[in-house]
Structures are given as C-alpha cells and as structure tokens.
Amino acid sequence: MRILILNSESETSAQWARALGARGHSVSVCCIAEDAMQMLRNECFDLLIFDILVGEGSGLGVALLAEFHQPNCAAMLVSNFVPAFQQELFSRLSRLKVVIGRGSPVEDLVMFAESCVDEDARISLGAA
Image 1 (tube, rainbow, N blue to C red):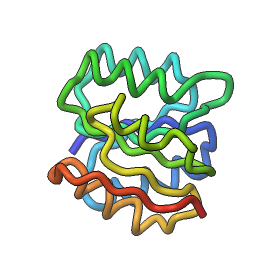
Image 2: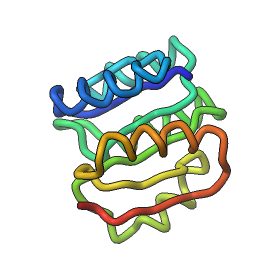
Image 3: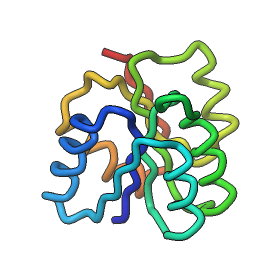
C-alpha cells in the first residue's frame, strides 16, 4: 500500500513511517501542506494520513484535494483533538475512514491504516 503522511511533527511522522514500512508499505512523509498537494497531483496513493492543521497549512484542504485528484485514496485523520464538526467531516470527505487521537499507540495507527483501505466502515476514537 502507498501511504502519504502529512504531519508537522517530524519525529512522530518518522515513527509512523517506520512502523508502516516494517509492514511492507511504501510511505512518503510531508510536513508542509503545499508539498503534500504536489505529491497528490503527481503520484498515486492508497491512503492519506493527516492532521487538520499542519504548520500554517490546512490538512483538511489537502484531504479535499486528494478526493478530487485521487478519488480512491482513503483518508485517516490523526489529531490532538476530535473536532465538534467530526460528523460533518465524514459527510464532506467521502473517503475519510478513521479519526483517531494523536496519542493513540503506533500499533493502533498501523492497524487502522491497514484496515481502512479495505473496509468501508467509518471509525472514530476519542483523542488521547
């Protein structure tokens, strides 16, 4: 599976990338929304893992662009908070499959990442 991670915390992103790579997935990491948008325009991905805010950019904007350029790319939101408009996120982002807290164990992130591409179920866990 090809995965794009958009996250401003490079150490956390590297930890996620190592865990996903150890399971045989090809992982690209961006810490700037514009870079992620460019990658989505030029490369194919099966999954976008993103946070709502990434530095001064919008992870939500990147997820919306992914829906346009890659309608089969699933999305997974990892955030420090679960927004009050979470249900609206699921309705606006048809490929959003999972919302988990940033404090979730890496093993859980990997499990959800692998399952959300195959499953059509939408899962929401509270932010840690």
